[in-house]
Amino acid sequence: MSAYLLRRLGIALAVAFTVSLISFFLLHLSGDLATAIAGPEATAEQIEVVRHQHGLDKPLATQYVEWIGQLLRLDLGQSFFFQESVRDLIASRLPITLTLGAIALLVALLIAIPLGVLAAVRRDTWIDRLALTLATFGQAMPSFWFALVLIVVFAVTLKWLPVSGNTSWQHFILPAIALGYYATPSLMRLTRAGMLDVLGADYIRTARAKGLSPARVLFKHALRNALIPVVALAAVEFGFMLGGSVVIEAVFSLQGIGQLAWDAIARNDFPVVQAIVLLIALIYIVLTLVADLLNALLDPRIRVR
Image (cartoon, rainbow, N blue to C red; front, side, top):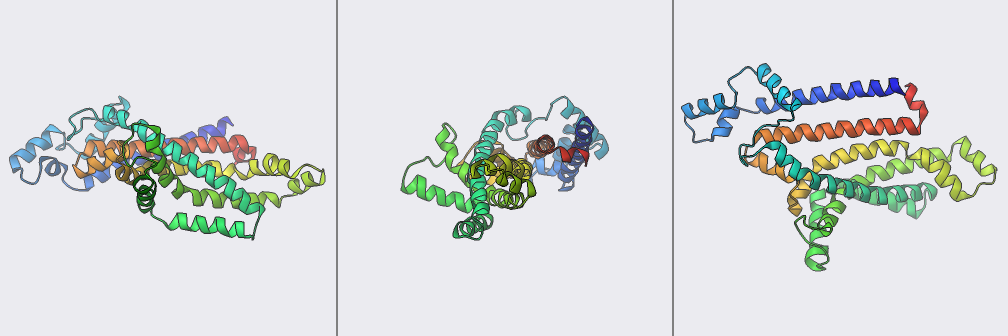
């Protein structure tokens, strides 16, 4: 297990280094940052002052090394627009996005796993076809459009839930459903496929031959093994949710890092954009690493690969 852990940790560090390179150089290759910061009406002298003030006149390699040094000290720089520490800005917004992502993932799992199990047990019946139809609609339907439908039905027409804000738990219901439903189809199909494979295995037939109850065979023996790939996919989907929260937070006016990223992009606030891109990528890497370790604990065969 130690060798597997070290191997996966090495891969995670290599990916994190690659992401840092990409997030740094793509931002600098997008155009002249000094001109963007100074504004379209700035003179050449003002642009040069801004370039020197932010260290943009140094070689890119030097800027990257200095940026990495700041990151290691947890110094994410100063926001151009908000005029405060990027670290403080993200720290104040991150709990909202993490809460939204966690609730959305819970919604997706509560729908996908029972539906996937039921579709596998009732294969080729109307239940199976209904589950696959719902999965198809969920995959094809844009999350922002579904969010607008939820607002019209439950907030405007029925007046059951608030439209925007994040001051209470009710504010997270509609955005969590809109964000979670997009991840439901892939989780449901993987659960269904895993259950179909497991239900046809020899050890399941042996368990049934021993006289074990159908519920015990299904939930104790079949479901545990079928959920192994679902664990990894759930971690990946959670990372996608954090990245995809930009649109949902904008629709519901949730003041998380998604909304912060939207505002920073609109205002050319490059330190904030760069920090958010790197943060979401690092969270995604950590989640993938945790999922690999959980899979290794659930299935010892993975450790020897």
